[in-house]
Length: 147
Image 1 (spheres, one colour):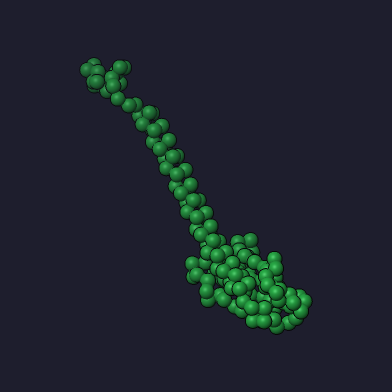
Image 2 (cartoon, rainbow, N blue to C red):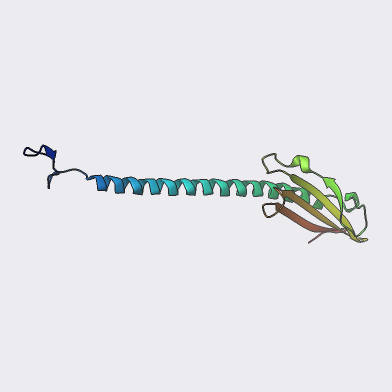
């Protein structure tokens, strides 16, 4: 509305519409919601990726333990008596989606003449607190599997 005496615009009371303050408050609240949503989405994506990698490595490691459990007692190699020693490196079976460096090995030991220990270890990610280690171990008896 124009005030004719001074040619200035005056805000008339009772005129429908939004004030500038209301628009700014709405804009600030919208920006906050979008920022929070984006942060939650990013966090969710990171957690999902990490969980997927852990599930992949866990599945491959457990499958290797099962392969050794299903072998005959005589076919499980032992190199250094009762000291766990690496007998297989199956790093090539790990998916390349795991963060480098990664390694997957099988260790065996002869605990007694009729008992062998099998340990399967998968390690991935940078050294330090971000490194993930998955390890399954089992005993195989000459007469069968013992857990």
